[in-house]
Image 1 (cartoon, rainbow, N blue to C red):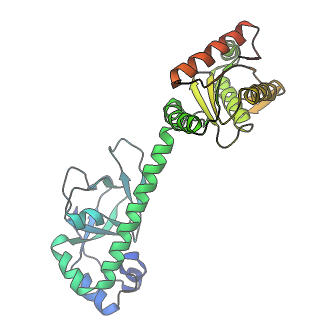
Image 2 (cartoon, rainbow, N blue to C red):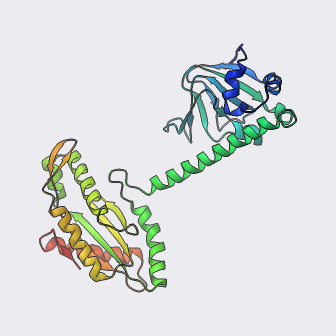
Length: 312
């Protein structure tokens, strides 16, 4: 990073969030504390391994922000008017992310030894800075929430995964037992899926699994949880559903797929698939593994009886 000569453009700077509503006279004095710098493409501005001393404002170009590793997908892009390092500038700790120049950049940097002068010099700038920090914290919270949600989802079908099943079973089974309500589990297996893959290709098999997930999900209540348990196998947790109703639901799910002869996919028109279903209801002192085992035994009976059917 090298120091750069830069021309003050007050109208442009006043449009930036950091300087909004700062009186021109105060802004002119504040700018004397900032220094201009140029960054080359690929040059690192901030790193979690190095304590940050500066608040950085982007004038030109783009910065990429990475969490954890530079090998990860960037989480955000900073452009003209955006700030970087505002939190570590205040608390004098190492940044929480890598910030790298994606293009040649020109930035303004303010060293931390001016921090207390800012409090005296411009209350408006400090308010703007605090609002930027709050925005950054909220953005981080949303990213954590998104990451947590994605960690519970199967990326192919959009169904929940086994990690979610363990979590939701603990919650729903306790709730149903406490309220003296039933809880059922369906285990579903796509019939002759290996043959389907061998005949039509694995990509076609992926699209068939997506069809199954979409068809099943459209028939379920919001409180039900559709889980891709593994390969071509799915589980459905049905809180507050009696056994007889679960049997009817299983039959409805089976018929919904059986009624689809073909479906459109990016690789062309493909034949649909059928499913076999095993069903079990929660018994006293049941854990997840016990309930899954009984549903899986019922699924085995459905397949042994000819497939494309529901079994208890």
